[in-house]
Length: 351
Ligand code: PMP
Image 1 (cartoon, helix red, strand yellow):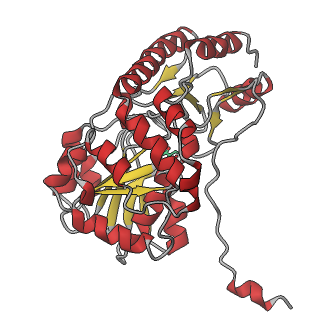
Image 2 (tube, rainbow, N blue to C red):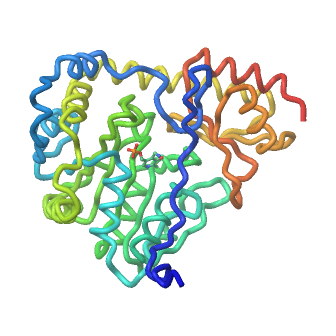
C-alpha cells in the first residue's frame, strides 16, 4: 500500500518569518525596509510598456547589469542575477558544493544553508561561533568542501572585518567561498572588490533589504567569469527566465537612484543606534550590529514571553527557539515611530 511513499523526497523546509496581511501590524520580523522603494522604481513600473510582457524576459538582463556595474567594479560576465538571493544561493550550493568533504558554516547563521545541504545531499559541518557570537577564522583552515559566511551574520548582526574574510579565502584556495552579503550596506564593507584577486570567491547580495524591494525578488552574485558561467549553466538547466521583465526594469531604476538609497540606509543606521541606546536603558544587551536588525537579550526577561506579548500588541519580531539563542530576540529596524512604539510596549511588559 502506498509504496510510492518510499520514493518521495521528504525534506524539512526553511521557515520564513510570518507575513501578516493586517496593515496595523508593526512588522519588525523579516528584515524588510520600512521605507518605500525609490520613486524612480514606481515610475519605471507605472511607465512599463504592457506589450513587452507578451514576450519572455531578457535572460541577459543587460539593463539591470549595467545599472549594477555603476555600483560595483564588475563587468557583465562577472554578474549573475536571480529571483531573490535565496534562489541565487540555492543555485550556488548546487553549482559549487560537489565535494565529499563537508561544507562549513557557523552553528548560528542563516537557517536556509542546512536546508539546501539536505536537499542536495551535501555533507556539512557547523562551526561554533565564539561566546561573543564571532566567527573565528582559524576554525575554517581545515579540509572542507566549501565555505559559506554571512557578513554581517544573521540572526546575530555581527560583522566580520574584510581582512579576516580575506584570510579565510587565502587558506582555502581549493574550494569556493560564498560570502552572503544580504545586510552589508548597513555599515559593512563588501568583499566584491576581492573577486578580481581570488578566483574562488562568490559574493551574493540582494535587493530585498537596503534597496527596499523584497517584493520584486531580485538577488545577484559577483564572481570571476568562470564561476558565473558555471552558475548560468546550472540555472539554464532549470529555467532560462528566472527574473521577470518587470522586476528587471524596477531594479534597474532603483540602482540608478543612489541618493535615495543612501538616505534610507543612513536613516536605518541612525534609528538602529538610537534603539540600541533606548533598549540598554531597559536592561537589554544588544550585540554590535552592522545590519538592519539587532539581536538583543535581557537577563530579567524571557525572550519567548516578550515575543508573545509583543505579538498580542501587534508588534511582530523574530524569536528562534534554538540552542544558544533562545534568550534573544531579533528585531528589524523600522521607522523612528515604529521603534518608539516598540520601546513603549516593552516598558509596559510585566512577566
Ligand atoms: N541571506 C540572508 C542572510 C537572509 O537573511 C536573507 C533573507 N531571508 C536572504 C539571504 C534572502 O533574501 P532574498 O531572497 O529576499 O534576497
